[in-house]
Length: 156
Image (tube, rainbow, N blue to C red):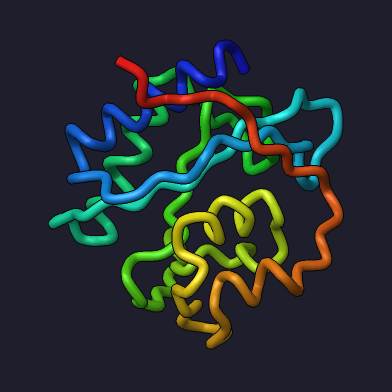
């Protein structure tokens, strides 16, 4: 919702200030909403951060950033929102706890995640599937439209 590119840029700045150094970032992609209807198209991207935070601390920090940028969580249903920060991977750790699952459990099903991931880390091996991101993207059955934009979040 709102100025989608501005929220992405603000989130990246806050992540850099509170999480660690951003070491890679994909292009920004415009995508159809996945798994919901009556939402406007989303902007999606992937960024890699070098962090000293534990996975739990990282989750708390990203949740605070979402809240700071206007994200309101009212229910378990997917509602329109200013932004959504997902932890896709934490190195090659596998975490399966009630409040945290890493790698993100639906990466392999979502073209809007795999396409930007493949842009910046196609040779990374998914620690559960054993396949590279490039292989997962190539074999993804999601037919939703994922369009690279000309949005540049790194202009000063």
